Length: 204
Image (tube, rainbow, N blue to C red):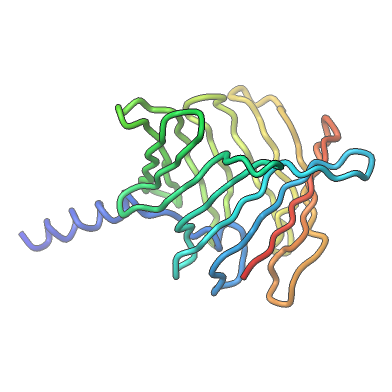
């Protein structure tokens, strides 16, 4: 009976566990909060797209986040609950996102409305060091994103459709790091559209 209860508890804990954000982003331990600003760059001119503020748990997961646009209007707010993550939006229903572990370093993240209507679902595949290997969309686009690394840095993200055709290829480059190894300035350039973004990360 005790063995059975142990396995039930283990499965329950696995159903709500998520990989550490600090691991997936290759950040050092001990970060309590951070701000992430995303800009689009055209003709060397930067325009703010969105600003995301994050507060982390003691073990490196996102406890709370708030994303606003360039005018300060709320785009998304997330709160980590015991069994799920609550996502709130200004113009649509709230989402309840649940994570379930699968074998071979994978997890399934599914989001539902309060009426239990599924809104999205993706399978995240991880490398042994906790970084993302690929993300498979199982509900909307059915695209797969492949993540490539070199010297423990993200260098490229390739997106393909369900038939394996190339959708986009984005080159990623960390231009500035702090003394602990956090990437403070990152650029992302699409080889197909030449769309360029700059991400500024400010950890505390």
